[in-house]
Image (cartoon, rainbow over all chains, first blue to last red; front, top):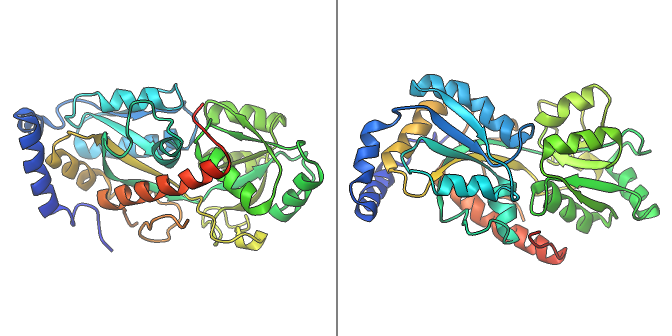
Length: 299
Length: 32
């Protein structure tokens, strides 16, 4: 196992030198002061979704280890661009960080939906926080109990089933479109501004299908407000042992895991980047899949 | 608990952007 922080010593030194050369004396000033005040984790998505959950999950232990408060700051709007721009333009001293999720960082970027911000060039990753399969759920009024029944139902009833997403480029959107292309399902896209807003319409039955990371959906499944069909992974999720896997539903190798990672503005000093994960990652057992080290998605 | 470090995250991001571009083009998805 390669623990974050152990592998970046030489690279960090090189990066620190490069950063110092690039931005003058500012890194040295920041290095001596981090953390000198509260650290903000910006969530570019409304409260109530998986990204918000990931940020809140690590904020308390991170604050304890840094010796400074760590606050979660939701800055939604513009399909996540408002929050992205806020962090990209913030002082790169480590006190303003971004909780990025694959929909924001990869999905929005793939469709050119990040405004003037580049998710690959304007930020540097500190480390991954979570990597989890998605949970596929339907409203209980839909007469289906597994994915094969859903596929058949949508084909027999075109334009009758809609799916929710957090807007164009979100993982719910691209992931469901990928699922549609692989299965021939016919579903209408209904974009929302975030998971919190989506849940109300989902449990009211105004949209029928939704995929998301488990945390926002588990209580709804347990309360019978939505019906879980399967998880997106080949294996069952250890936290949801009663929910079948994608393979059990006739689907295999869906590249639909959702990940969350902590980012800093590009010019943040390397020693601050190195300091953060070393000090907060160990007591944050947030990987839900337990499947080991992250691998590139299977496309 | 195992971790993906900065290089892993950066590599995965580049890979996923390329993958989702294909999906988005196939489904005619654009930024709204």
